[in-house]
Length: 449
Image (cartoon, rainbow, N blue to C red; front, side, top):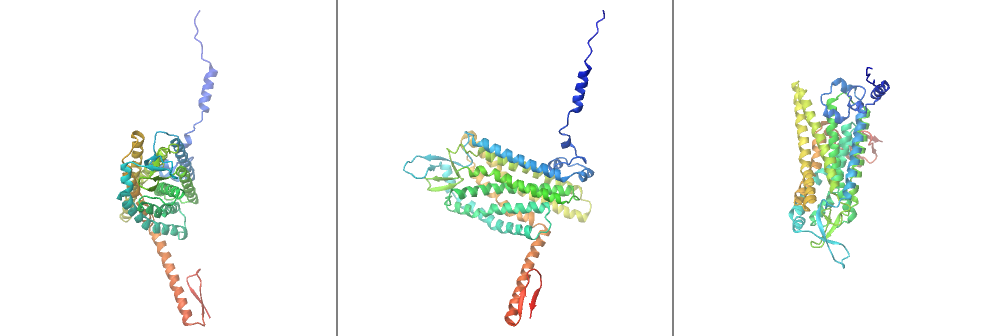
């Protein structure tokens, strides 16, 4: 008898084929760049060679939604990392380590620090240099950002996405420098905090929160500017709504990310120096509320990723502008724009890279060796990074001709109204029988007989 090999079951083949054919493709919509689905801003930055036809067919509102989802995802990662850091027992925190002094008769817990920390807390670095820098930033940043915010809210009619981001950046910088007088008084007074625990927490929360908030809005500006250069025709109301939604999401992310700063006691009394520090010294028993992973999450999630995105956006912007320089008259303007982009990117990186790198190094030394000698360098770099709040108005707002025209017209109109009021006052004193009235809603002076 001839041996007949068994045949494969056809139902199994059909079943497998049916499963293969019916298998969904979850990533198809994300990878497509045609007219069916739109690409997010991050994907557009990574794929700079997208054709003009595909770009004109994309829908920017979908990219805005994905941008919002990315921001909320970053907020969740920061909160998760902060919660992990609160249960860590190996780290000592961001600041100097304070050793508790046992004194049963004392009404307030007192601590002591090592010789290195004493030299920093009593030296000219923290009592002279830091206050001078903060005073300079305050005198420049407060009026310039307040003026910019006033122009954006009351003198700018069209609220484009760039205007929305710049207004939020000015607000973040203004809130940042608003609390500088307390920090200046603290350092001038020998790093002695006399305003209470609650106000110290508010100062620390606003200091770090608004600094990283400014970084995020500068990142939004870079992406938005690149988006406008790549898609110069797309101007819709939905883009402004997306910018407004992104701005609200950023403020929520920053608000949530600063909550751990309010859960930790920030003031510590140093008995050997007879001073109460604010955020510069942490006791060893504050291990349950440790901030190692918290600040590390801020450095990575709220600075490193936005910095990479900002650098990529500006580099692609420069390449796009260089490739489009054909006419001589247009080429001069675009070369000027390229120089401005390089200046903005350089200031951004110079101001924020040193402090965040030293922050990570400081934490690594404390975690691995139990002590760190780079804290003085870190607070110096952190202080110098605040110069960005005084520079932002001049590289983002005042460099724009439209902004300068709005500001000039505002001052001219105000001076013209003041002059007309003075004329009305003089005429009423010379001719008391006449009754003069001024209408602020118009540019003319009404005289009633």
